[in-house]
Amino acid sequence: MWQQSDMVKLFYVGPQFRRERGQKGRFRQFYQIGVEIIGKSDNPAIEAEVIEMLDWILSALKITNTTLLVNSVGCPKCRPQFNEKLKTEIAPRLAEMCGDCNRRYETNILRILDCKHDVAIVAELSSIQDVLCQECRTHFADFCRHLDNRHLKYQVDPKLVRGIDYYTRTAFEIVTTSEDLGSQNALLGGGRYDGLSESLGGPPTKGFGFALGLDRFVMSLPEDVPDSSTPTVFIAHLGKEAFEFALLLASRLRQAGVSCAMDFENRNLKNSMFVLRDMSNREQLELTETELLEKLKAN
Image 1 (cartoon, rainbow, N blue to C red):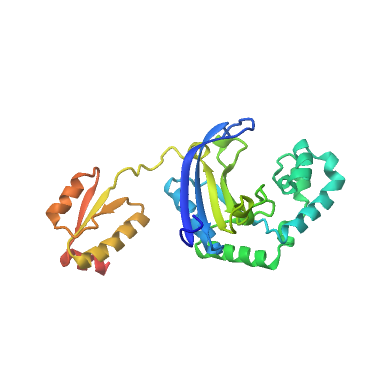
Image 2: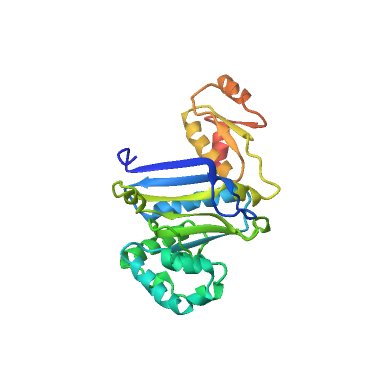
């Protein structure tokens, strides 16, 4: 993959297993969907594009009770300074904190910010935003700007971290208020992991992605999930100019929530009907070069 191109976009679906005790919405065996973008660029627009795709998916499935949380976890240049600052602040109160926090203090202090028991103490700790280097500050500001440009709502959560060292800069989670998930309110999470390739012995490689627990995702679906298994509109175009407009019309129909398909070949109407017969539960829309096209253009 390092030699294929400047950017590789991948996804996977399959079973996963965890060692921890199972809970409501957190199973010992579960199914996971992952998306990864690997390449040479760390442009924050890539991150916003992935999150925009997730927003489309959630909207299409009518999952509305969600919040996008974002943060920057810094980089190897500025994160060690934050780790030392956390140790200094936590040390006097470590005896008051839970066993997990005491263990994380020695192994991965950033994970203390994830603690669900010592919330009051964690709330008083410094924010990593205060110690970010200039490069990380600029990257995060650009990332938020790209989210704003896409009209994506989000909250900056200074306590949001990823618990593995190879994560760098952008981290995000989408959480839900669905009661079906119990205390496990994180629907999915991801971030940038520019240090992963090198940690595995590979060359420096940029990466960004997320993982989505399919079981937890299904539990958060509303009862009236839209059925999009078959198209509801089939567009048959007659002529080159009509084809160009048919593309635009198909896009507008989909944006309006109408599922549609179209014939991409330059067939006559009779042959287009053979394509139509292979599809079910659809209405037919014919675009000609003349009368109908002019009416649509007028709108």
